Image (tube, rainbow, N blue to C red; front, top):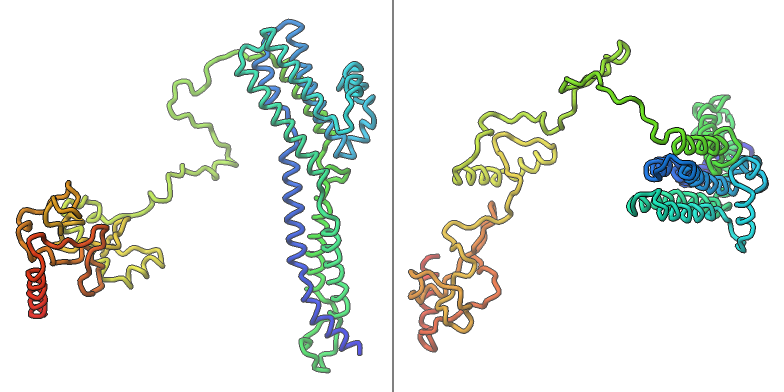
Length: 448
């Protein structure tokens, strides 16, 4: 009975779609994890714009620049408190933000007096806008273009905070996590019974050679469970695990770099002097002994490595020669198709990059509508004229020939397709028209 149960579990365990469920689940988790990292707010660009456009070395200008960047960092800290347990444990109340110097008691009072039940991480952004407009009216920001650049970057920072808020609000469905977990562990529960050692002497199907230690089953277990643990680790990157985002470090780093950029680094410039490649047209930094072997020539393009025979480098000015090459290509459709399939072009049959499907038949008239008899005919446009040598020939009115031919195909002549119906000669009416038609038919029979 145990052997039958083992064979049954081994046979039907493969029906569990572990790879599909787990692969789709991990892909979704990793995409959300990377999306949250891409939306981490970095105030470096905003600090560069504030330091470059908010001008002034007086105390008020310095206060304006530092306050603007403090508002931007405060907005990021407020959103970190909402999504990260590590930051929330560092600043459990709003009073802790005042004690940390991220906001003043007056700003806290204004924040708490706002009658809004929603998350107020956007309030410092509005303070930023009001202070930037005041700096523009006071002349600390030179023009409206600079003000627009600053506010555009602030909106980008605010949008990233909003996306982090959305990622935390709309999480991965719990039932999907449960399905992936149940699929993995139920699969290995079936493998625990179905991959048991069975005596090969009994001749059970699939057990001709068996081992006491199921090596490949253990590898399967390591891969699938490790895959599941990766998803469980990345599902919340703002936690307190070792591989989660260092949000407290982000708070410290962003505040320090932004204040340093707009205060100590304001108008701070080292001495401008000539570089060591001043008189060299092709500067080449030196290589160390460890990196010299990795030096490579510049990549010029893959098409430049193609070798073209010398006789094919000459321009073709003779149209007849070009036509002969085209006919040679059309005469070997099998070889041409095989060459295109293999990606090899035969030098004996050069082809142009634009191969026409239809070629004008030799002797065909140049005009698409050459069969009009008289320009004054009602069905004939007035601006279309007929060749002089064919205008008085009544038989030419009924002669048709195909304008184009398909190379390699032989068929009966076809009337060219155009929008104007065939015109009957004005001088041929009634019985004369019938006689001319019979004459043309007899000529056609004789030619055949």
